[in-house]
Length: 394
Image (cartoon, rainbow, N blue to C red; front, side, top):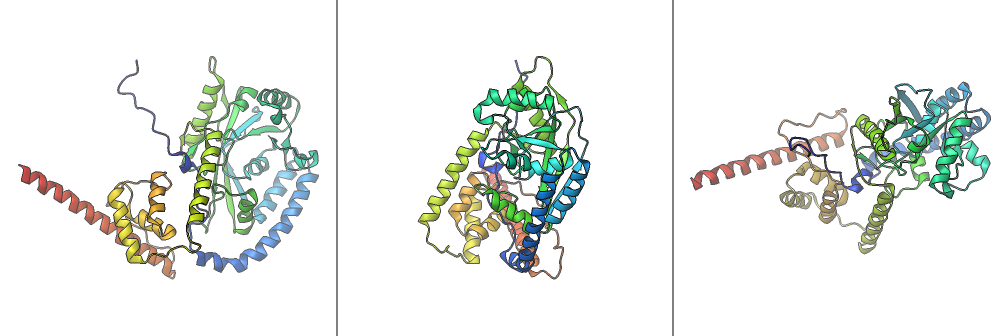
């Protein structure tokens, strides 16, 4: 019988919170100012990207020169790959979380690897992009059997993304598929993080196409993809494949400081379809132009939502209302976990803006401090009212 003192596992976060929903987290003015730089940069990088593709086709994967040349060229394109830890040469299968359409490229630049193809594409394109046909379309068992033969006869490692779907990599991992863990009893897990200096723009959002994500990769100044090689893990005696997959996923999640969920890629696809359909239906019902709310109405709406959802910081509610201009949409984002609840502390203060010459930063700082003071005073008032009420009862 389980001891009562043993802590229960934390509840899984809402499924939709595993994905990014908003691409931009910065002002439109900043993007407009960057546009004159972005257009010529985009054209130059498309030209350079074609040459990088040619180099990747000419040089063999096992050639060390290929990795160095492509990393430099990818850096000029705006894709900077960094790494920590060491690849274990004895491991023939690599598994990783999945956050961008370029995860395969990032790992391949560090160590040659191939990815099982699930698309029916010409052999030439499959070879150029580093895919290998392992019979995934013919069923799971065929995939496992051909993958076992591949790692015994071919030189490159086999890379797998057991989540089978893109997530933000900031909240939780989808449940790992078990087929890579049936291929080889020794697995090297990898964790991938992505960051973008200067611009707070998500690498992928729910429902976006691959070419839209790629457009931001080659247009923004730089995207840093950091790959962490974790220690190789071996399946223990009497450990099932499912238990082994779960143990590996926990190691990846621990390195990323996120949780492991029980959601599958099928759950994610179905939830995404429903969410996008609901969003399109809501957009079709709305008028073509969004109703603009005045600052005073936004303030009143923020306080009203705060009354119903006291665990969410009022400054976060006010900031979300500035984006949505719709109290109902903000409430829905709170309920679905997109707008996260947070414990408000009186010690936390906003840091001064990095640039004194940026009026928008000062305006943001002023608003954050104003709402923090309002929330702090509200909490003090409620605490005092409770004490007065308790004293009156006695």
